[in-house]
Image (cartoon, rainbow, N blue to C red; front, top):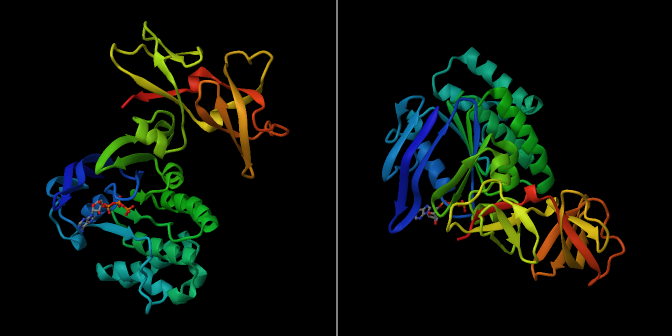
Length: 353
Ligand SMILES: Nc1ncnc2c1ncn2[C@@H]1O[C@H](COP(=O)(O)OP(=O)(O)OP(=O)(O)O)[C@@H](O)[C@H]1O
């Protein structure tokens, strides 16, 4: 449906986007995820036609749109701040796009009804936007974008102006709405949960470059580099080195973690484990079968509601964070001896930079 091929954009000497290359299939939702300033919005603005790329090509439904005007592209956009027309009612806001594009009266009326129903705002059709909550306004903005039945919908940080609770609710609604509309969607966000939960594929950007383009699970379980392992989820980095025969990772302290595939000579890797993959074990006794255990001292525990975040100092000197749901930290005091256990298959590796 949409493809970018080597798309670049600089502002003066600053390269904002470099060689962006990816495709979005019909009905697919992809997320551009990355820290502030990584080039997400610039990429979106080039797709929308508000910015002209310095190089590369953008194609939409087979046509080269690299240089076409924004209004000539069949694209729907939802911005962070909703930007509804304040003097028009909710229904008139949704009708605006189709009417502007010459869609007939009856068809426009049907679309307003259909898309307001889809975002569950039918009962507010006659209201003015300023009489709606932030979440309601954002749903209307979505209906307005969908009502033109665009080939692609662009969502720029669509939930970031909402409070945490509402953001979570609207996130799952958004997924349903986009699915029901069969929309092809690109969502720009710096919120990893939003990207992982909404998108079929996540493109992680940093410094103007796309660093990984993969399914959410893949990004989380097999990040392409250290930046992604730290930006998406949290990581405990474990000291160690690849064994001489290059089939294992010998951790500081002696524990051996087998590698899924033997590494080419000269390649150095760093090992990491997600906090929820670690378990607190008693200081003595058998290590559960198949697990590796590392002696450690308990430091502190913070109760977060569902999880408790436990910090331990391994005897190797590494500090690790364990997310625990079993109440294992109860009764432990600073300095108490414990072991930190995990299954070797749950250790991830990235190239040492
Ligand atoms: N019109 C402009 N003129 C000059 N520099 C710009 C312009 N627009 C963006 N930039 C720069 O290009 C880089 C990428 O900006 P962009 O807005 O794409 O980042 P972003 O990933 O969307 O960040 P954020 O999440 O903060 O919006 C930044 O360093 C930014 O300062």
